[in-house]
Image (tube, rainbow over the protein chains, first blue to last red):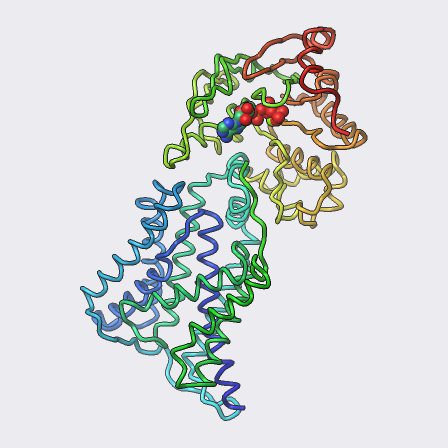
Length: 291
Length: 255
Ligand SMILES: Nc1ncnc2c1ncn2[C@@H]1O[C@H](COP(=O)(O)OP(=O)(O)OP(=O)(O)O)[C@@H](O)[C@H]1O
Ligand SMILES: [Mg+2]
C-alpha cells in the first residue's frame, strides 16, 4: 500500500514536470515551427541560476527562482531573435543550431561549476505523513506549483487576446498574418513564454534533483517521447502522455529498485507499443497544410 | 482609384505568375476578376494583401526557391506594396482566402475574434459581431462549434464573416462559390450585394464568370498571368472572346 502511494507521488511529480516541458516544447513547435532540442538545456540553466543565487549570493530560494525564470524568458527571446529567427525556415539548420545551443550551455556549466554533483536547498523543509508514507513538503510544493502554472497557461491560451494570437498562428500562420497578427513577433513571444515554462520546471524540480551539466539529456528524451506519444501538436495529448510516462518511470523505480536504471527504456518501450497501435499518437491531430 | 495595382509582375523562381498587371477598384464598386485555372487570380490577391512579399522574405531564409516582385500598389493614395502583410488589414483591406482557411480547431466565435484582432474597442467588436451574425445567422447558432466541423457553406460564411470583423473598406474574396450548392452560392452572393449597397468595395475572384459578372459593376479577365480583357460587367458578359476563354479550358461550374 505504501509503495502505491510512493509511486503516485513520484508519478505525479515526474508527470507534471514532463507535462510542463512537453507542453512548452509543443508550443514552440506549433507556433514558431521550431524543434527546440535545447529545450531542457534551458531548464538546466535555470537550475544553475538558482544554485548560483542561493549558494554564492546567499539569496533566499524564492527570489532566486523568480530571477531564474526571468533569465530563462530573456534567454529564450534572445536566442530566438539572434539564432533561430534567421534560420527558421530551414528545418535542418534549426535542429543543428538548437543542438549546438544545448551543447554550449552544457559546456559553459561544466566550465563554471565543473561536473560535480550539486544540490539546492528545499524551499520548505519537513514532511507530512499520508497513510503512513512520508511525503516531503517540497514534493507537494513542486507538484502544486506545477499544476497552478498549467492552469494559468490554459487560461492564458484560451482567455486572452495574446493566447488567441498564439493559437491561430499555430493553426495557420499565413491567415493569422492576414488578420493583423505579426507572426514573427508572436513566435518570439511564444519562445519567451515556453522557455520561461521550461525554466520554471527546472526551478521547481531542482531541490529534488541532482544538479550536473548533463541533467538535460534524460528529460529531453522523455519530453520528446511524451510529445510523440501524446500526438505531435496536441497540448492535451502532451498532458496525458506526460503522466503516463511519469507513472511508468515511478513504477519501474519502486517495483524493481535494482532495475531502476531501466526506467527510461521501459517508458520508451511503452511509447513504441502505443505508436505501433496508433501511429499518430494518443491525441494526434492532422496538421493544416500551408497552401 | 481606391485600390490601384500598377504594372505588377510576380515570379516564383523562373516562372512568371503575374505579368505586368494593372487594375483597380473604386470606392463602392464590386469588381470581378475572372479567369480559368492557374490564371494567377489568387496570386494577385495574395500580392495585394502582402502575402507574396511575406513569403518572399521567408524564402530568402530557406533553401526553397525565390520570389521576385515588381510594380506598385496603392490604396487610398498611399503605397502599400512595401507594407508588411500583418499591417495591411489596418489600412482597411482584407482577404477571405481561397479554400476558406478557417482555423479549424478553433470555435466559430474565436475565428471571428481573430478577424477583429486589431480592434481595441470592445464595443466596436460587439457591433461588428452583431452585424456578422445578422448577415449570417447560422454563425450565431454555431458560435461555440469547432469550425472544422462546419459544412463547406458555413465555412465560407465564416471566412467572409471573419474578414468583415475587421471592418474593411475593401473586401477581397477568393472563389467564395467553390464547391458549394447553388442555393448556398445564392445566399452568399445575396450578402455581397447587400454589403455593396452599404458602400463596401469588393474585389471578387471567381472562375464562374457568368455568376461573378452578373453581380459586378466592372470586371477583369485574367489568363496566364495577364489581364486580357477589362470593362463593365455588361460589356464582358456580351463579349464573345470572354466566353471563348472560358468554354475552351473549362465549362460550367461544379456540380
Ligand atoms: N507557391 C507557388 N509556387 C510556385 N508556383 C505557384 C505557387 N502558387 C501558385 N503557383 C502557380 O501559379 C499559377 C497561378 O496560380 P493561381 O493560384 O494564382 O491561379 P488561380 O487563377 O487562382 O487559379 P484557380 O482558379 O485554380 O484558383 C499556377 O500555374 C500555379 O501553379
Ligand atoms: Mg485561385
